[in-house]
Image (cartoon, rainbow over all chains, first blue to last red):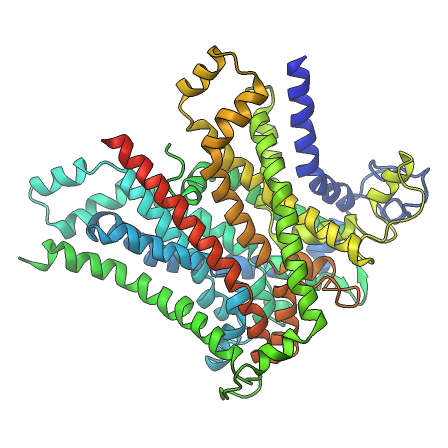
Length: 278
Length: 299
C-alpha cells in the first residue's frame, strides 16, 4: 500500500515537471489540422495524435528559419565564454583554496555574492558600456558580458573542489624538488581536472539559458542565440509557428537535461555552500 | 626566495585577473546602475546629468510601477511557498528507492535544465486563449463551464506566472533538499524510529528542523531567481494586459531599454537591491552556522 502511494506521488511529480515537454513533443509532430482545433471542441482529444505524426514542422525549422544559424551563434559564444571562464576562474579558485591563506574563504564568499547581482540590474548600465565600446548588436557584447554570470560561480565551484582534493600529492611533489609554480603548472591541473570539467559544463548550460542580455543587446535576427531567437523571432508577422517553435524548444532542452543529470551533484555542492556536508 | 616559490605572489597573480574582471564588469556597472538612477540619462546621449531624486519621485507616483512592485512581491512569495511545499514533498518521494527512479529524476530535472525563455514560450502555448489544453481538460472533466483567458485577465495571468515560476524552481530546490536529507546523521533518524516516532512526527520534529539551513539556501536562491527574472513575464504576458502584470525587471526593461529612459529604468531596477541584500545577509548567516557546525565536528 505504501509502495503504491510512493509510485503515485512520483508519477504526479513527473507529470507536473514533464507535462510542458510532452506538450512540446506532441505539438512538434502534429499535423496543423490536428493541432489547431479550438479547445472548446470537447470531442477532439488534444493529448494524442488524431492524425498521423508529421515531420513538416521540423523540416520548416531546419530548412526555412534561422534556427541553425542561432545554434552556430550560440556555440560560438559558448566556446569563447568557456575559454574566458576557465582562464579566469580556475586559477582564481585554486589561489583562494591553496594560496590566499585565511583570507581565501572570505574573498571567495565575496566573489560568490557578486553572482547574486542579477542581469536585470546590470543590463541598463551595460547597454551604455556596450554602446560606448561599439558592440551593439554583436555577439562580442555577449562574449564580454556573459562571464559576469559564469566567473563568480565557477571560481566558487573550483575553490570548493580544490579544497576537497587532499594536499599530500602536491606536498610530496614539493618535497621531491618541484617549485611551487611547477606544482601548480604540472601537478595541480591533473588533480582538479574534474573540477575544470564541471566549470565547462556549467558555463555551457548558463550560456544556453541566458536571455536578458541577449534580448538587450541583439536586435538582428541573424545574430541571435537560440534562447533569444526561438521565442522572439520564430514568429511570422503575427502568426506563431507553434509546431516549429516547440520542435526547437524540445531539441534544445534535451541535450541540456542530459548534461544536468550527469553533473547535478557537482552543481549542488556549489549551491549549498557548505550547509550540506557530503 | 624565488618568485616560483612565493605563495603570496603566485596567489595574487592567479587571483588578479578574475578579481579585476569581477570588479570592472560587475562592481563598476553596479555602481553605475545606482548613479544612473539619480541622473536624467537617455540612451542617445552619453552625458550623466544629475537629476537628484526626480526619477524616484516619478516612479513612486506611477501606479504601474507600484503595481509592478506589488506583483514582484506576490509572484516571489507565492511561487516560493509552492516551491517549499513541492520540494519537501518531492524529496521525501525521491529519497526512497523505486523502479524507474533514474528516468523519474531525469524528468524531474527537465524544468531546471530548459532555458527560461523556451519554457516560457511552451507555457504561453499551453495557456493559449483558443487552444489551451488546460481549458480542454477542465471542461471535459466537468470542472470548468465557462472559459479561462489565462493570460488575458490580470488575476489569472499572475496566477499563471506563479505556477510557471514554481514549476521552474522546484526541481532545483528538491535536489538541494535531497542533498540535505542524505547528510542527516542516520543514527538520529534511527533513534527517533526506535523511540516510536511515525512518519509525520519524524518529518516535522526531527528532519525538518535539521533541514532548515538547506531549505533556507534553496529558498534564497529561489527568491533571487524569481524576483530578478525577466523572461517568464516578458514572454508570457509582456506585462499585459494593460500593464497589470509587470514585475520590476520587465518594467525596467520597458522604460530603460525600449523607452530609452536609462535613468528611470535604473531607478526601477534599483528596487531589486533590497531583495538582494536581505538574501545576501541571510545566506551569510546560514554559511556561518554551517562553518561553526563543521568546526565543532572537527574538534
